[in-house]
Image (cartoon, rainbow, N blue to C red):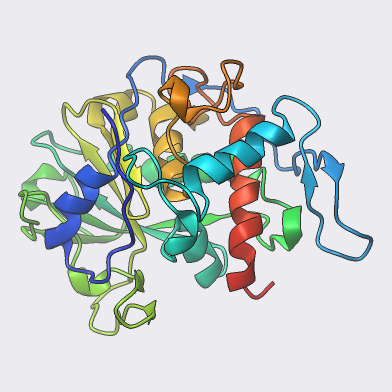
Length: 317
């Protein structure tokens, strides 16, 4: 399955989420979805540093992926001059609602709504693992941002603030200890959602962040949608939809391949499925080249750093 370019929504109305969802679809083949992560709490290598003394540290890779290939990805897949008539490309600079934008806006925090898109009952013991599982995926990505270009966040704190279900009987708990429970609020596709008034996003219509003052609980930035029977996953700035069965069976793994891949789309990184979407036949394995790696690699990390370099002028650090 392919994905198309799309821009951030100018309205928090989830009635448009089906359009956004399909437009940015990214299929990841199922399989072994849990591998040990290579990430650690320390920063990844800065490669050949190109910044002057006293400036924020930036550089170019000197192993694994070449600077030439890295620049090609920016120039031909996600930069300001890419051909967006090709549905696999998008312009990162045109969107101010990326996950990175949320992290900076929230000072290192991301709030999640879980949209339980299933007829299966979810136990509290299983649901209580979701937040830590998401945190591990962001740790793997943040490993490449720590210390780079003055990125100020040593960790990304994930909070699950709500569970949306069609019927509360699908949960085996009734209190709000894991986040507020929302019952029966469905989008146009019949998928449960947290209240639109609680969706915090960059609204192009007002050139600023959405007003969540009417939210009766905590606002959320992105969602996690475990969907029963879904082939692989979907992801963009709105969050991640993933195969429920695969996610639950691998929930204790260090790196959950499908979720981590879809988070990569939320950071603005594209898929690399076809030969013409890659800079060369020897383009190194990476998580965003589905099937070639189960974990975040140096290629993924350096592509994320390039995104930070170009988005940094909009941030105050």
